[in-house]
Image 1 (cartoon, rainbow, N blue to C red):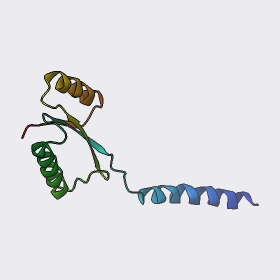
Image 2 (cartoon, rainbow, N blue to C red):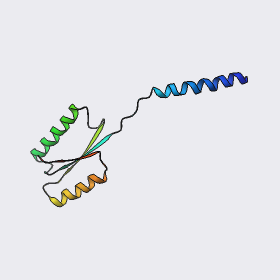
Image 3 (spheres, rainbow, N blue to C red):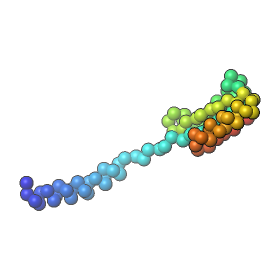
Image 4 (cartoon, one colour):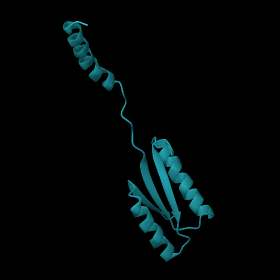
Length: 102
């Protein structure tokens, strides 16, 4: 192989590499929402509140499992349990913690 051909090959790949890299779309990171519910998990009020919250997020383009993940903790109207769950949610370092009181 001639030296000139090697230099052309290196120069060509150096020029085309940034062009190929530009074609990649940035990966959107998954957002995390922590929800602290002050109800029991089987309460109608709590389930209605979660459903309404998730529907509102979907209208804004946030879909659970695609670009957002929701961690829900049910406090069961127990102050000690709510305090424990609040600590757990903070430890997960979510983008936002939503205390849902319906």
